[in-house]
Length: 124
Image 1 (cartoon, one colour):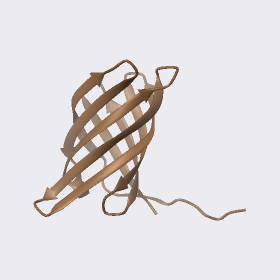
Image 2 (cartoon, helix red, strand yellow):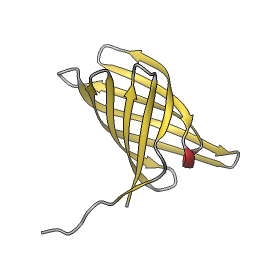
Image 3 (cartoon, one colour):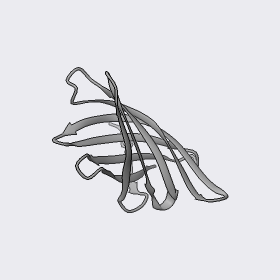
Image 4 (cartoon, helix red, strand yellow):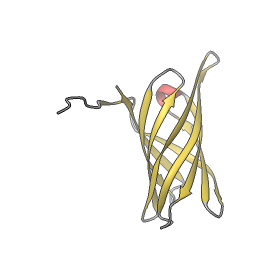
């Protein structure tokens, strides 16, 4: 029996970002967002949601960039899964950050409010 485990620590407080565009395609949707994300500064991100056979979920991938100041810059790539929950979209992504850390992002896109909330956890 293995005693290995994953420890999740909150990187920062929950963050709300504004959805800046949504592009619908035949087999995927692209969502872009921007906002202030504490540790990562001003962040710009894009999510590519690919549909599974049900059309109510699938895989997600994308990239993000964060600018803290003229000398501090972060980039990240991520992949994960998404599913629809009523009018909301739920995403769970593993994120590789340019500073060498790996995060788990738990995201809720509130389509009615045109924003998304992100809970970011560092994976040790």
